[in-house]
Image (cartoon, rainbow, N blue to C red; front, top):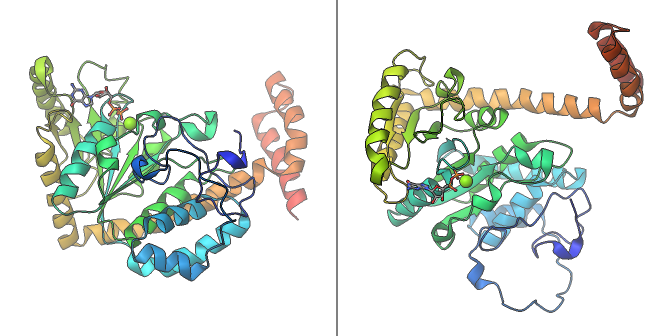
Length: 379
Ligand SMILES: Nc1nc2c(ncn2[C@@H]2O[C@H](COP(=O)(O)OP(=O)(O)O)[C@@H](O)[C@H]2O)c(=O)[nH]1
Ligand SMILES: [Mg+2]
């Protein structure tokens, strides 16, 4: 990934080092900070004096009063892997925490092409019109591996980008240090502190990312399409068991009948599954993100869920256990990265891997050897 300074958005702090995880993604309309592109001057700006670093209080006040530039800068700070930025970010988060938790957190998953972004745009626009403030975040598992983005080039949402009550933030690049979970959760908290009362998190249904998103949202929506093949859609029992609702999208034109048939089929199947949320029945619905049919209805399902869960105390319980779980996820991420970044481990790995592959030593013996190298260096 090229981290060329002159490619960076103007809101990147002046002292951002190489560890600063910022990239400009192709295909995202508007500015990288989620602001409409229209306000961008057509010609490059003359070199401006170096940006002054904001203090912790300036970040906090900016976010609390809904300053979008500062909101974007705060998220950038939160996404940074540099220890100095991480420390500052933690101070900011600590002060923002009392102002968080007042939104409906909704995760949206499904295979690429299912229509998640189109749906989020339709839903987001409808919610903005009815007075909500909507933040859209993306958790993209591909970015850490390929530096490409499954979601990026589809995260256009042109209409929603122009809404003054919407804020769209593309996926963070996790770099080599990982930490996608931390970044996404903290970004969500920052958006809540900035007064967004609906958080929509888009992720691709390919394994770990949906577990990550499920563990940070209240409601998890699985978007499906007919005819894509169940195995393609990750239609394993496990994924359906994570969902609070299944939305069969593209129920328009010729596809409407098939979508209705699929809904009946899924509803039958769902009877045999453990619901994702105790006291809530996961059901299948149909919608068209393009015509807008069924969008109001799916929101009413989400809203009913939220009210019921809030009243019964299940929402507070879920959030508490999510936060505790999050602590251990971060511990695991930390341990994993310190293991793989440990020089002694890196040194013995090729030899140990070869020995295991050749059958010269057992897998258990290899583990002992790797951990011995790790602990030797740690102590
Ligand atoms: N006919 C129809 N097409 C849709 C619908 N929703 C999305 N699409 C199309 O499906 C394609 C993929 O949509 P996108 O939102 O990018 O899918 P994502 O990868 O799940 O985010 C795009 O060409 C959309 O225009 C729908 O409800 N009906
Ligand atoms: Mg998308």
